[in-house]
Amino acid sequence: MRTPLQKGEKILLVTYSSWISLIVPVLVAIIGIVASYFIGFTKNYGWIAALAGIIYLVTRYFIWKAYIWVVTNYRVIDEAGLLNHFAKESPLEKINNVSYDQNIWGRIFNYGHVEIQTAAQVGATDYYNVHHPKRLKDTITQAQSDLEHIKLANQATQMATALGLNKQGGTQTISAELEQLYNLKQRGVLTEEEYNRAKNKLLNS
Image 1 (cartoon, rainbow, N blue to C red):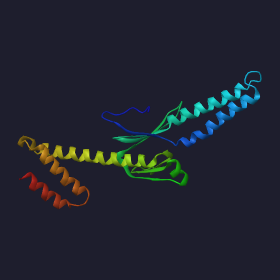
Image 2 (image 1 turned 180 degrees about the vertical axis):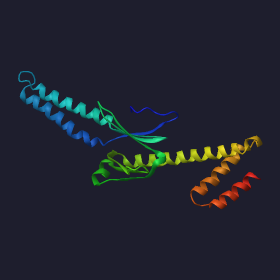
Image 3 (image 1 turned 90 degrees about the horizontal axis):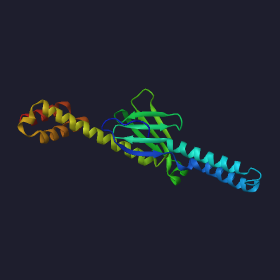
Image 4 (image 1 turned 120 degrees about the vertical axis):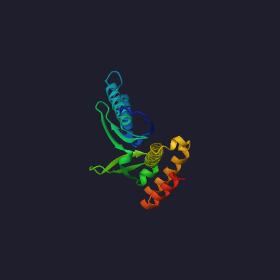
């Protein structure tokens, strides 16, 4: 991956397009080698056909290796380009939904289409011929969940620190309880009034 990582960023998954895309280059290389045998490898310059097929295969292979999708604990990166470089990023916190689908051949050879819907104006981002699309989708979903948990924990800790609860020696316990209350409010289990009542009761206990 050529996109630099941010401070504290970790790679969770690197995946490629399906190896199916390499079938044609492999066949071309085989045809070139077979053709060079019948043409005459040395006397009749048959080696040119073999060399051309091999060069085509090697080029397509490195292009395939350069086309990747990377999931980190902060974002999803779509990267491509052998000589040039293309990169598109989707921050995890901006992703609203991730889905995937596979046709019959995709289920057999384990590739498919992944769609990421973001809050940006561009709408959905589509990834085609992804190897193991379910793993990509599940990794993104889990990374979002982990990021949200970290954000809630940081908010609870900051709240407890701001209220001076760290002086009482119970910051970790109170922070955890504040985090749980805030998480329940975010999920709609608690109303704003119920959340404030429970928070005040916790802080005044």
